[in-house]
Length: 80
Image (cartoon, rainbow, N blue to C red; front, side):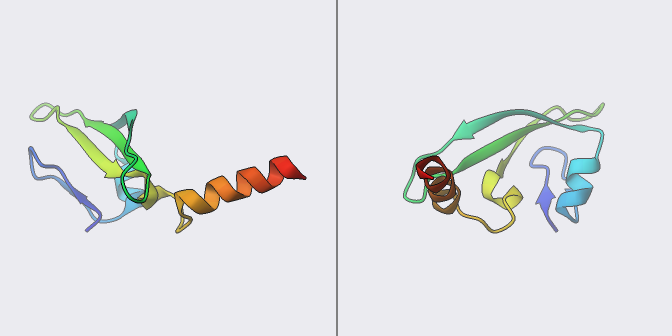
């Protein structure tokens, strides 16, 4: 299981199922600068019985590339 709605208990078995669900809309990003950085993508689950916001770690959508690795790649491109 990829994600479960904390309000209505709907479940999505995969990232693809979650992203293709028309009742799930991306509404924002919440920055988190803890030990490893990163953040959360915020999705609104809008159905007749639910309207909660679901937070999903942004790293789950990064294809196993860490924030530090992405920043290093950007920095190296700017130097060249």
